[in-house]
Image (cartoon, rainbow, N blue to C red; front, side, top):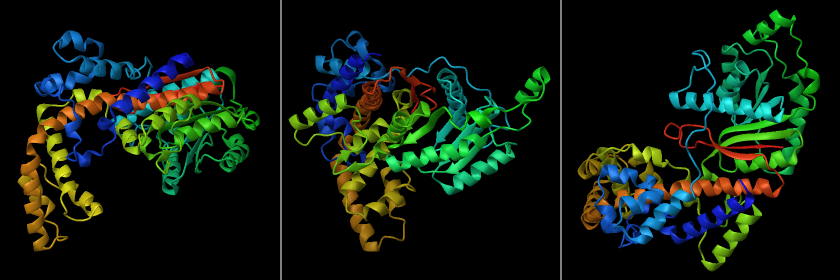
Amino acid sequence: MAASSVESSVKDALNLLKKFDWIHSPQVIKIFDGTLQNIPSEWLPFLAELDTQELNNLPYLGESSSQVYPAWPTSLHEFLQLTSQLSLLRGQIDLQPTAIDANMARGMNQKKLHEVSYMASLVHNVMSEAGCDLIVDVGSGLGYLDHVLHQVHHHAVLGLEVNDSHVTRAETRAAAQGLQCGGVKSVKFNLTYDTACFQQFESLLSSTAWTLTCHCNTAYQADLSALNGPVVDTRRATLRSPRVCLIGLHCCGDLSPTMLALFHQVPSVRAVCCVSCCYHKMSCVSDELSSFPLSSSCKKIYDTLKTEGLSWHISPQTLRLGAQETRSRWRQQTEEDHFDHVRHVAYRGLLELAECGDPVMKRKLVRKCDFSSFNSFLHSYFSSTYFSEDEISRGKLSLNYLYTKHKDEFQLIEIFTALQTLVQPVIESLIYNDRLLWLMERGYTNVKVLPVFNEAVSPRNLAIAVIK
């Protein structure tokens, strides 16, 4: 993809997000603060008459909207078409998943098994193309991916994990898998975006990489031995200056930008293959995100729009929407699923308006509530000993008043949610395109964004792959 094309998409996406800021910037719990009234009056009659199947299909209309619904206003058609055009393709690439037997799959649920099997294959392909001889897995967790990469694809893997207990459990799991061979290892290391940390990373490679030599009796080694005689592992010498493929499965917050910076600054890191998540957890100082925009091109466009829009900016709330469910999950919703979602959003929204306890306690109590009806919700919420009799009486009176006042707006909640579902991939695509531009500005041409998972199974299914 040409840089000019990516830059054009970034510009159009930022303009759309500025124009429709009311869709992506509000907190959902504050749904009754005037947010629903922002839905254009010319759109509302047409969107309100959609049945469940039509509402579910709304994010898939794109260019076909004017043919399917010719009576709809032009502004709505333009919105549907533009959100479709500015969203990266999410259909899973043609990739043979790595075969994982029952022993390797222990501890993995179906979602994790799907992710590990496809991520392992993609990483193996990137390793081969880049000519790397060591994988460094950032945020390696319990080592599920690392163990498969070693057992099936026979790669040396160094897992970096900030959580002590995860390191211990990963090593324990490796032993249970029969991986006491030296070819896969998990260590505590917190990767941060600073020169000192990058220097520590290089020191870790110098002291650890050459020790990652496999002496386990795998079928792979047995086969080689049968053909060629005893296997001699030559990596002890070559890994003193390893060619590293840096990987990450669901890199939270600032971690993906940090990995890209490490790739750019450390010569031994020859490739990156990572899937990002939790964009709203990027660090933020004085309302400015530290990891967005990354690229000079995106920053220039963004700064211009902020100047024109006075206080407008991309907020953590916008990035939170970018990290939520994709349209494939929305399409699977039943009528009852929609009703259930309306009740959850509406009752929490009413509670936000009422003075019924401090915000932290509200969140704790709401998790345990019964949302089957408003009366059931009230009973669940006020059953806690946290409230006095007087607080319960006043709270119920206040919430019943708010329910009566806002109940006619409940019908707008799923329409608003559908519009958010349309904007979600635009936000996520903008984040990835900004990172692509950052890499291109530094001269990297072998850069791709690949939908590695089935998004119906794993919504964060985009992987960025770059090779020096």
